[in-house]
Length: 327
Image (cartoon, rainbow, N blue to C red):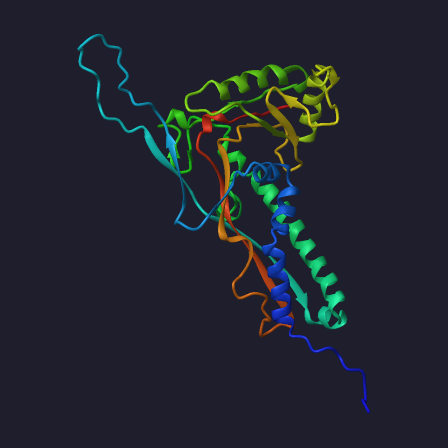
């Protein structure tokens, strides 16, 4: 006769590694993280997140001037065939981040049975999702200098407040006027000054050489978004005799208005989806380490780091702009 209840025999390491890998490979973690941040969801939904296979750095070609050999001529007049350059490369460093799913041996032993393990694992993954989403949302609006410049280089660096000096993506803006974004500072009272300044900024970001399309996204704070909505919603549009859907996100011209708590107070970013990108390495795209979930020799636990390696960037800063000092 048995002297006691038999406990199920499970090889926890391979089981949890396989379960975690299945979840990560499904793409659900990436989807959930991106959807929690309006900025990252916008990047994801427009396929502006580029998956790369390697490279020391991320390289984007940038055109900073025309050919310079345009000439009006008549008859057999000699043409201008002077050679030209006008194209350089912007380099973006890889930035890395991680979180870890950690399950103690006590938690495992207290949650015997397949269903209970799955519930515990789902709770741990939910925690990881929240952490990744919160930190990437912060990084999306950053200047990339936190933690010894290990932070993702976000919108604050891409669309700088000072445009006549400084270096972005290894290109010095003091020497290259074409590598300057548009910015208007000290806007002041949003209810009075927002629309006129936004109108000029929108036009400045549209009427430039090399731009594709018009700005199509605005990212700002809840306070500024509500002021802008109050200003633009009274101009109700009618399509086919029907009143426009007032429950949809408000738009200014071609740009959808989004707000996020992580955006810097008093700031509005005007983006063009054809010229803003995010990059991620295919082997660190919210991925588990190849070794899977590990059992440390000095801990009664199982640990699975989840890795991310990438950055944000642009190939045309002049197509992007921001307003600051909104009150």
